[in-house]
Amino acid sequence: MEKLRSEGWLELFTNTQLGCSQLDLAEFYARVTVTEGTVTSVVNGVRIEFDAQTLGDILGVPAAGLTYMSRRTSPC
Image (cartoon, rainbow, N blue to C red):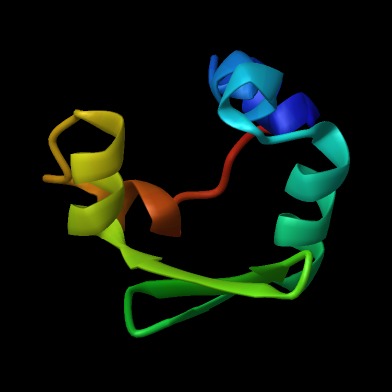
């Protein structure tokens, strides 16, 4: 949660109007794997899978550089 807060994404992922609770988010991260650029997890028995382009499309932001950023070590 602190990492999301420091990156300015906490509200996006914990907005209950969108149906994402902190418990759901914790479950997502507890089960997440990243293989060849594809993020996979399971939340409440539902498999979630996306790549950088799909995430960019969902969030309405460019995906360029996301692969590079995900390889960097966050100070959190």
